[in-house]
Amino acid sequence: MERTSRWGITLPLHGYSLVGQRAVVTELASLGYTDAWSAELNGVDAFTPLVLASQWSDQLRLGTAIVPIYTRGPALLAMTASTLADLAPGRFVLGVGTSTPVVVQQWNAVPFDAPYQRSRDTLRFLRAALAGEKITEQYQTFAVNGFRLERPPTVAPELALAALRPQMVRLAADEAGAAITNWLAPSDVPRVRSAAGPDCELIARIFVCPTADADTARAIGRRALTGYLTVPAYAAFHEWLGRGEALRPMQEAWLAGDRRGAGAAIPDDVVDDLVVHGDLATCRDRVEQYRQSGLDTPVIAILPTPGLDAADAVRGLAPR
Image (cartoon, rainbow, N blue to C red):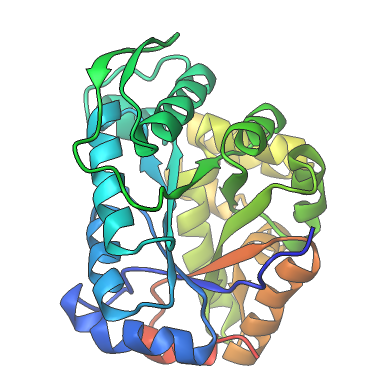
C-alpha cells in the first residue's frame, strides 16, 4: 500500500514557550516536515500546542501521541477532538492510548481497569461520535446515554491507538487504522509491522539526542529509558522484541529500589538501539533508517541536550 512519505516533529520544543515556537512551526513545512505531534504526561496538555499550530500552518498534519483514554470522559474527549478537527479540517489525527497506571491511578485517581477493552470501546465510541451520531450504548467498560456532538466536525479526524504488543497492535489496525509506538529500533519495525499488517499506518516517536559526545548522549538516554522501560507494558514490549535478558538487570535493580543502579544496568548497545545520537547528519540518517525499515511516520522527539538550541536541531534534522 503506497502512502505519503512523512516526517514529523514533536511539539512543544524544549526551551521554548508555546507562543515562542511560532517562528519554528511556520517554517516546518518549508523544511520538509509533514507532521507535528504532541504528547501529554505532566507538562503541557496534548491539545493546546496543536491548536496554536493549526493557526500557524495550514499544511502540517497534526496529531496527539497520545491522549490518555481514562483521564477524560468519552464525551469530553470527543468534544475536544471535534474542536481541533474543526480548526484543521482533514489534518488532525486523534491518537489515544491507555497511558500508564502511574499517570492514570496515582496522578488522576482513576482505576486502570481492562486496558484492551477500554481502548476498543473508546475507539468505537469516538468513531460514532465524531461522525455526528447520537449514541446510547452500553459498552463493556462504560455506558453512554443520549450523547450527540452539537457541532460535529465537517471532516472527522483520523484515529490512532498507542500499541506496544501484538494484541493491541492488531486492535489499532482493526479499529483505528493506525498504531503509535515508541522506544524501538529500526530493526524492531518489521516485527511490529508483522502484527499490524500492511495497511495499518505505523507511527513512532523517535528520541533524538543530537550530540557527538556519546557518553553524554547515553547518560541522557539512560535517564529517559529508565522511566519508561520499568513500566510493565514497556517491559513486556521489549521482551517481545527480544531484549528481555539484556534488560533484566535493570528491572531487578529497579525492583530493589536502586534507581541509579537501574539506569547504569542498561547496556550501551540497548541505549544506542533506542536513542538516536550523533551529529545532526548522523541523526537524520538514522531516522531515515526507520522509514526504510517500514515505519510510515517517524516523529522526532528532541531530547534536552546541553548546548543545543532545539530550533537549530529542527532545521538540521529536516529530511533531505
